[in-house]
Length: 586
Image 1 (tube, rainbow, N blue to C red):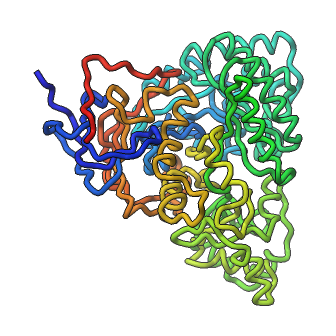
Image 2 (cartoon, helix red, strand yellow):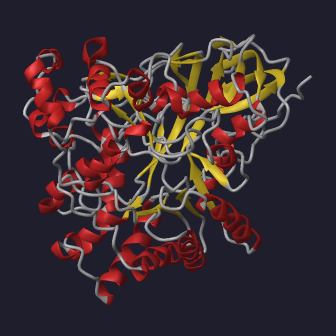
Image 3 (cartoon, rainbow, N blue to C red):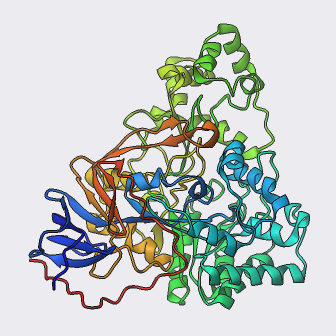
């Protein structure tokens, strides 16, 4: 007896995630899986009219920080609002497990500094119903969300869990410490962690300026984590490199990790201010590693990573000045009224920033690279669009121009501070070369973190608007290749081979997208975190429907209330269909 599909997606142009040419067909879904693809599929219990739209696999973001958010709310926004159906968290060596009760405040303080999550949010939101990493996974197993989530073992809490205060105080580990970190890494992978992660980047600090525990660790400690992957015979290694060392030294460490673990490694790859052409060397090294049988890939963002600045956000050009700190926590309207006072204005502009975190001071110091973002947001400004260029044209001090820009739209204006790439080109410097490279992965959405500083989780919508429909360069990706880069490639890179393509037997994670209406709105501040804390949210038009595990979770960008998303424990093999037959597309 032929089963009635739960859902039939009817008449869409299917981009199946393989990178091959699209074709028009229907897709049948039953029990969370794709059961048929063809042109003679019977009616389903529910139907989605996809005529005039494209149908794609759900997107996969392998670099997020929903480690805390997934424990206190059920929508993994903003990622889930942009066609993402699976996220991987636990990146950059930070997270909330393993942890002992007396270490919880340390973890909160670290996440406040590294990932810009307000302390009050974590203090109120986290349930802390775990200590070990396997117990954390068990706690996540009970959670329901709009999309699927997987996690990795983070290095910094692991170090402190094993070494106690010695780990937090950056003391060197003993041989016994290294052996225990290796053992716990293997234990976490066997329990269902997707991998292990670390950060060696000096920007990763506590809010008071102290380095995150993982950052200054020696090579032998990083290799102990890699050895844990080898012991488990599974998992991936994720790394945020140090840009204080040259590219050859970075590449040498990457190879050692991959050789020690025998497992895939991916790392954040972009343009370093210390070595502007280093990315070229790294691409060559990725190709050389692949030729040697090492699975090493660079994680790249399809636009320069950027900090959003404003009076209702964490940073702006005056945020670290003493007079502003005195009013920083006031309601926005009150803050704006004070800043419009001429005496306060003169005093604030005359002050110098004062803060223990050198990275924050660095972010606001580069006055040539600050722009008004606008609505719709302009992520591709020219040099002449900068506020500093505007100040020169008008013959005014740049600080005054910054001040006036912040007060626009009653203090709601957002300033855009790109941190990499060459301003003044349609495609920003190295990004145009990094995105289409076969050894890179589109990632780095950072959803669940940087709530009031970064809003990159909408990169999938940005890809669909900038790299295809409005592209003005021969670097623009063909749509089939772009879709593959958003779903199949990142899924396979972390071992999630049961999703990322539209084939019979595969998980029914699917987007229906009207490309004629795809539009990315400017980020807005909302105060809907625990304790009423703020975060940036960014909406999009054009997503007709998003399906997760065979349930419609979004219609026209609005949540349906369905929560089929679950913890994904470990790698997932590609399915072998049993009794399922795919009709041939016409």
